[in-house]
Image (tube, rainbow, N blue to C red):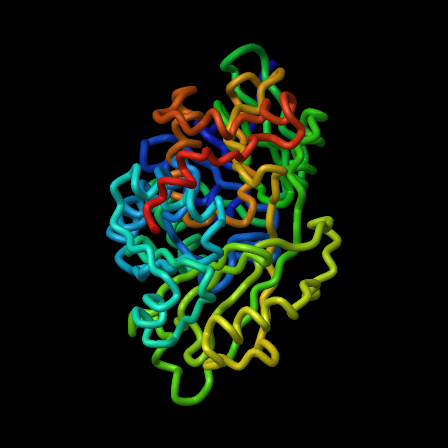
Length: 412
């Protein structure tokens, strides 16, 4: 069969941070690349917009620590090519109950990777932060230099600009309606958008965030357990006299609080006098029929802010809130794999980033580009990201932290 459509080496579907950085990766390797986005570029309907995301290497799983460490260098490489900053360094502070298995596993991972860190009891935390942070006596804190803040909308724009500079073609308002296999093995795919226009690609990478489940089911009938969630982050006013204490320029860290709820946040940065705090999680939704309203109860967050920040942040109500989307897998691990079936290795999936993937986008893009262009990639972490894990166990990867991990974390 003859096709009169334009042909590309790689077609990337979805222009959030994962797709845009993947298009940059393939284009800079000399591959003729097409990046398709269903809405306007830099829209606010998905997961890659806003003013800040944390970056940290404090993970209980080594495979994530490795991806973050690689991403630090790749963020800086991209910055050097574009000529401006999107990644701003800070320390990272994690806190939680001393018997938290996850927090102990974080320490164990740091020890295995020989990453500098300090484990602090409640008195040491108060001294380290001059009272800006307080934790209960039965809690511990972990302080490291592997933290920071990323400017998400600016970062996505950076990758799109670099992809363009390296010869990629960028098309927004181009919703993909069909991905069809062409001919036999290695003959590629035909991607058709809502306007009826089609593009032929030797390889295709799908990075459509909260729309992953819908698109994959439409394309091949496979039901991936990736649940879209609508989540809320809030900005809280720092009380008069303490504004500079919580600023990134004065050394306040990005932070995470383990337990129920799991809290994460960034120092005062994008909005002077306000500090960003959010709860990890959200409410299931249809990404095309979202409620567009904060659904998270703020009671637990108010109490957390009042106690952790020593009353120096007004916990009565947030000044403003922002909505975002998660693409949640049952085990909160990513999906980085070939779609398989009739597509073989011609279509690569990147999804299920579960609210913690943005920081790792440059390394994830490197993996997706490797898979698309060579059919393989370096590193052992991909076994945790297989689609097939949900066939073997509907809950995916079993997260168990060994007694050796929790007993040899080194903070007591």
